[in-house]
Length: 196
Image 1 (cartoon, rainbow, N blue to C red):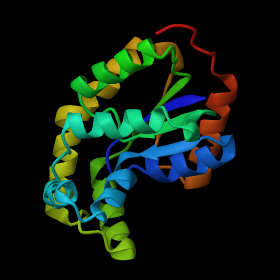
Image 2 (image 1 turned 90 degrees about the vertical axis):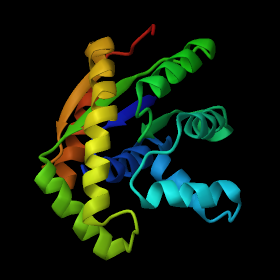
Image 3 (image 1 turned 90 degrees about the horizontal axis):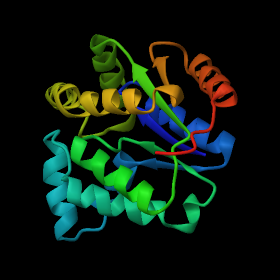
Image 4 (image 1 turned 30 degrees about the vertical axis):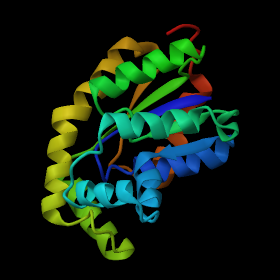
């Protein structure tokens, strides 16, 4: 099963991706987690990443594309995967679709998490207090939401139109367990897509 999650930061898509990945026994590919892991490497790239991420800006397509394709080709992804936080730009989307085509991979389902941005701000501030994340202060949140609206939202719309038969909108303001149940219901009903 190959799934993409779209949604603004703080919409709960990471939480849901973890739960769903466990339920379906597939890999949760969170670019945020992968990049945060990379920050601990202490090399030149990790220092550059730290500067980019702590200012709320997005990591370059070239870096992300390489990280993602390495993971997608790994044994860990043989059962399937959930992409969470990728693709974020039209350039990444084109790269991913080209990668899928050249490797005979097909998407099974796409989820779009929709939520009011005021609620997003509240959630992220609470998360920041609990997890002590440096990329979760109010200025950074606003930058990340603006970047999402400007760059990632058009990507989610593109995928929703291109794959309308397997694309579903999720009300992300609901309780965690309700969203989880809704995702599983969509997966059970979803037709398999046979071509890109």
